[in-house]
Length: 475
Image 1 (cartoon, rainbow, N blue to C red):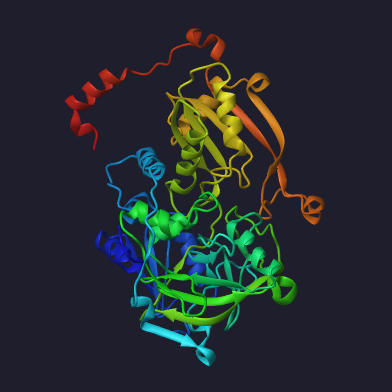
Image 2 (cartoon, rainbow, N blue to C red):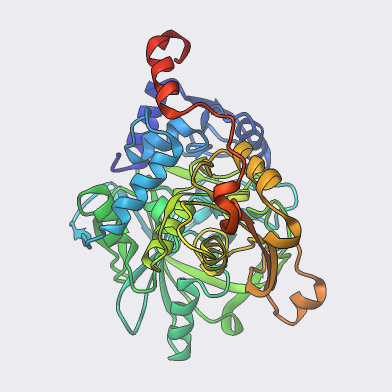
């Protein structure tokens, strides 16, 4: 595990998975190359000598879009299967004990401090990522840091951040997110909301900031637990909020309610693969200070149709698995989540132990925010002989163990998101961000499970002996 983005990129370069690209244009060219390379799950890219910007002001993209690099970023061994990694992440999460951050007086983020007339976020090579985007977005692989004014705990979130001008950034957050609740508390008091934003940081912070942790659990404390040591932070002089000391670029500022200072935000090609939410008046953050390292690196993580920022769904599958077990569900053997950003189709593998077990698991999973509750319309439960991380096996279960007449339910009224492309114009106009969900039981029928035809697969004992005898066939 690495304490900053640079250490990770150096390791990626050492193992031959990084390419430097010189001379690209921030206007669409970086975005186009990022998309094309992402589709191949090949190299991480570092763009330098960007058109109109000095050498050393860089943008790093596709840095996690491979199984190898994601494992490297979080310190997992390459010998582990994807499902084993999800389970290890889940198991460690369930033993969570807060490890609060420690304040330090100096760090690389303080190498350059810009205030007053020197504040200009456009000094950095902020890309325009997609052709129909409404502007340049510096916040894709970012952290947005806010504090609850009542309970005094700090939230880290991953929200998109548009550049409006040299000292104004967009502050788009979906409904019901923690940052939304926090900023509205400030505004209800007649106060501006203090905000810190980082645009390149230690990757475990970015991973955890995108997880649906429960209200009141500070991501910095959780990150300290998961990384095995406290996160070093610097307290911002202006907002008092924590700034990771090894971040690449950070800003401090304040956000007023959009009725006082709101601007047109979007459109932006979002993670479902559409421009579904259009352009609306959204809050902004007025920048009061910029901090950055020498030769700063923006972490660019633009949404790409059908792609995920990371191939192993730790942020959704691990969280869903943990939430189901905490709810008292028994017999869970594996959890995976498919679809864009691994947020759409949860698949849960269970060892059936009672009548109605599969329906219980599916109904609860569909309702939980973790893994599938955001735009998700399909929840699938399979038996424990099906690997949920293997889509071919999931399809096998769907086609051989699911009776559409008996095994599928449609339930209405679940929360979705303004980013949902299937929200009708009428529902969108009245703010009705709800959808129906399909709950699929692809398990052997409980009441005649003992009579269900056996599968034509060798026993684990014979498979293990064959693999041991002819090891050269199994590299």
